[in-house]
Image (cartoon, rainbow, N blue to C red; front, top):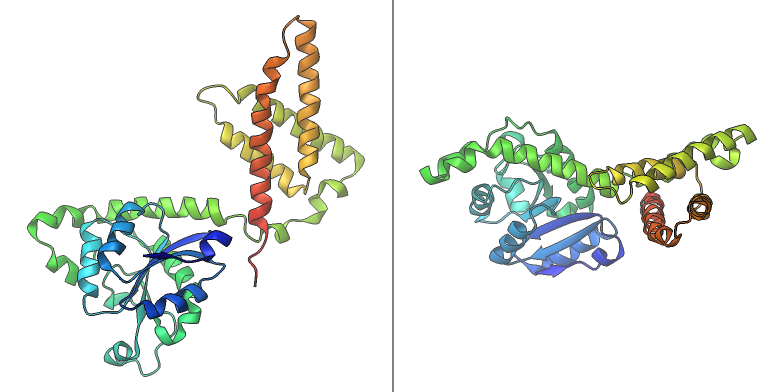
Length: 307
């Protein structure tokens, strides 16, 4: 079991691959460089151990076409693991399926084994693996929760495994929601930086617009401060909404700091007038750090992937 070096540089999509030979490790790693974190394995048991443990973190599986592929897929079914899948086929497999010139990305459809959203990719086109992963994920998210397992896999299940079949729709729906939420969180800001409207940037506002916008931001931040340590508050959503406005107005971290310091000064004067200690305000440094971290992460994710 190995991790690709790209996992350190830009972890974005987590892919787990099982191949018969480690000779495919380097081609897979190169194809997905700067795009995915890749876990590669040539040992089925190690592969399953990782997939079972990280089923709620993995975004896509890659399986090489091999004689025991049906058994591997059957085990995934029995473990109730439902994820996007790319199957790497070889020339012999392509010819057996009657494909003189196989399409580099081929949705399997009626010949599916895992589910009807799986995707095939000829090994000779492995450089197009990123597109295949994208297609597999997109197909998976569109897969109907009413979908059934392929007929062959149903026949292979014993009576004791029928519960896994009956819960397939529920498992699929849960995984789709989890994957959708995770991708929106991890990938949703990529490329957004260059899609923002510069006319909505703070520096391009009129003086009246700037004053109005700053008042709105200060009011939002004051609400965040008042709710930050309150149990049951939706503080993360409040910070996200605040950061969203700051981001699309192309404001800097220093401007967020100014908003924080101005509010702290006002609160300090109020506490002083009431004869109370200002030390409590020190705790709200955590609020500032939290807001700045959210904003920096949004800017980081907005930078397009390297070519």
